[in-house]
Amino acid sequence: MNDNEKIREELLNAVTGLSDEQLNAHPEEGRWSIIQVLDHLYLMERAITKSIADKLKSDSRIPAGDKPIELTLNREVKVQAPPYVIPSESFQTLNEVKNKLSESRKAFLHLVDHAKENDLEQKSFPHPLFKELSLKQWIPFVGLHEKRHLKQIEELKSKI
Image 1 (cartoon, one colour):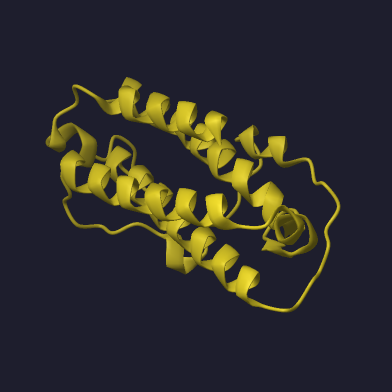
Image 2 (image 1 turned 45 degrees about the vertical axis):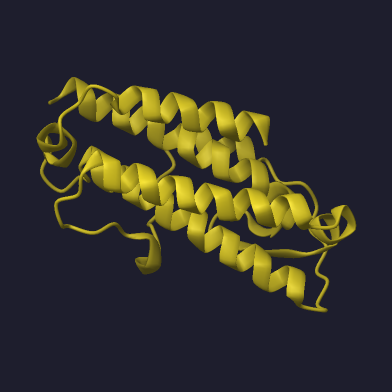
């Protein structure tokens, strides 16, 4: 979880000093704004937390071998975001999105801190690219996913 916290800190530092107008700007047609990328990360963390919670409550055990989740950082491989993690088109302030990210992180940390190691290793749910992914691997995936989008934010910043 330490890596996830460091990545979150980098992410928030990357957007510090930008106005809400800059964060909501669309420097490229058909691409998300920086605020939408942050909103997507909130929606993803919330969805992953809910899926892990559901699997922890379930008696079903589907063990999954370790997958090369570090490939998440390869931005040349495009994955279509599922509808439930597509961000809002509405104007949002950085403060609003930071509050949402803080809330989703608290819920994620609480869940992980109270989970049994055996359950994290023996239970899984599917990822669009990696197929069955253990709950244990979903934890660092959250950070890798944020790191992937940090690169996207840096690209967008350079075009504002």
